[in-house]
Image 1 (cartoon, rainbow, N blue to C red):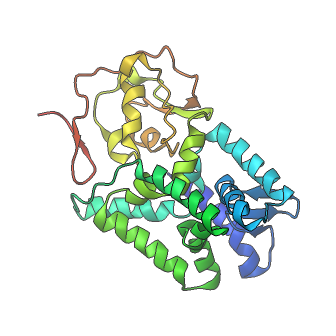
Image 2: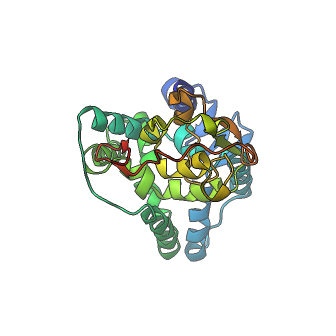
Image 3: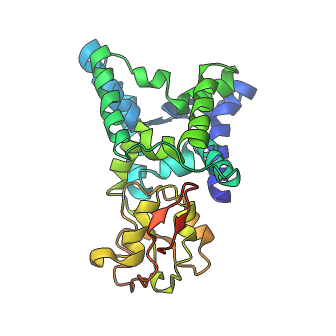
Length: 289
């Protein structure tokens, strides 16, 4: 947790020290930037929108955008696509705070939205870009909007962030990142083949305390690796895993650690006597009656 917060703060600071203090280490934002005047970095999801928009507008991404997207994509093919969500995205601390407050305040229940909704929204974002010739999503994207708000002060970006926070706090636990965000959906597809994974190396030590399920933003990804469902290995290979490491933090039995998708293939599976049965309104798992 501390490592993630430090990385998120450092990345955000690199973008802010330029407009705030005139120290232009990085120019741009998380959508597209130039570091030290030589290293281009482009969000592959933004490039995808730009290519779709170019089909209508006739304006195509520059060569530096393609190079920058290739670099970023290569990194996430190694470290895990949705590592972006847990380690880079500036929205993540806000949604984590909303989830924590929701639990502390005892807010239960809420709306139900299929996790596949974000896939449909991903497709809609690309289709709208192609139909309008513009990257329309970037005008309301909470990530870039939050950065604009920090640089220029109160504005639409802050309003969008407040709406995301309120949605996660009052309407649906982990609703934005887990069910709606099209950027998260994009990186989940990249994460399907990423090398670095959380691995339940010592899954035979599991005592079914369920703490990992309680803190995981995507708890459905844990069971196959932890319980060896259908003979699966100990690595959590789902693209939905954010590699946040919260399960590593909380497990008293040191079941989890970081490894690769090829790690722990022969690790003995955890006992299955207390497999989680349901999720309560506060997001915590409970044992079968």
